[in-house]
View 1 (cartoon, helix red, strand yellow):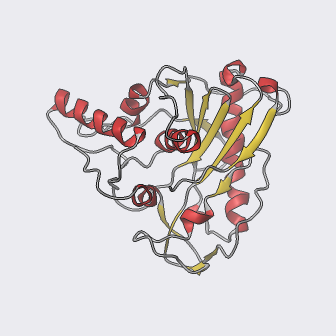
View 2 (cartoon, rainbow, N blue to C red; view 1 turned 60 degrees about the horizontal axis):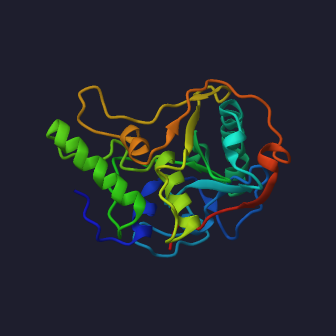
View 3 (cartoon, rainbow, N blue to C red; view 1 turned 90 degrees about the horizontal axis):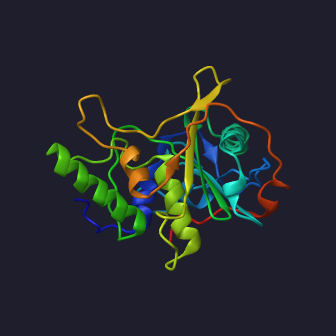
Length: 264
């Protein structure tokens, strides 16, 4: 069972520690894309021990890119194919955003998740560093769900193992952003007909394809986001290509684009 002892930011810091090439984060940059995909500058300037890093730093840095869009109407009217296209467009916004900060190619995430719930859409890109990460922090809806998944997996497999990717996936981050944005009074995701989708860029950097939630290895030694999204009551969309959309008209049109603070 996860030991809830370390501050929330400690877990988030472990989400995406990556090797970089002399990135410079002297000040936040204005996102270039329509979906407002943006580097979490605050998180990227904190070390794994919570210390402030210098603006120019060529060792390890925490890298997460995300965005939040609010619409006038319920996003349930946005089709799965349109959500796929939005996720693909968000993925394409990552490289120019990272290049603004002079990140090297090894630090650029190649996966993007999208969560559609209520009148909101959340985007989040995981980026794992070397090795497997663990997460320990104060109780929250997300960590409680992860704990229950771990308990369920132990009950069925007899193995007390952690999330196969250490909990650093985009599906987990999207859920975290939802609860951070809506505060202590946030309604549980389960029961809200939330939809989630993840895409990834192939090695040729040209094609973007759907990516199923991680789900443990062939020998069932681990569990993954397949259990997490089920526990959160999220529908994983089965769509392989996108269709056009217009942010000014879908779901009544967008009214706010922002970046939700990841740390409390």
